[in-house]
Image (tube, rainbow, N blue to C red):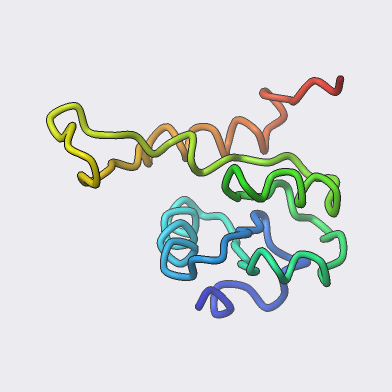
Length: 120
């Protein structure tokens, strides 16, 4: 569980909102290795969570983006944008690959404000 990384979600740099705790833990580890503080909540937990102080962005998946946007006024990084099929494994159910380098680059880009979502 990621609770050991930070004392409170309101003090984290990044909020991870995923129901799969194994994936949330892996993503949390990747981000903490980069010097970021991380908190994780489940998708259902977001309904009970209040706007964080100091939290710079939310990492979630496609199905949760609408709920996160409705509940929190924070930039979102869609984890699924960095998961892709390996070209050499075209069979259904084949292992997929996570582009960690591009994910970290996007997280820091969004946090620094160089990549902003246009409202519209």
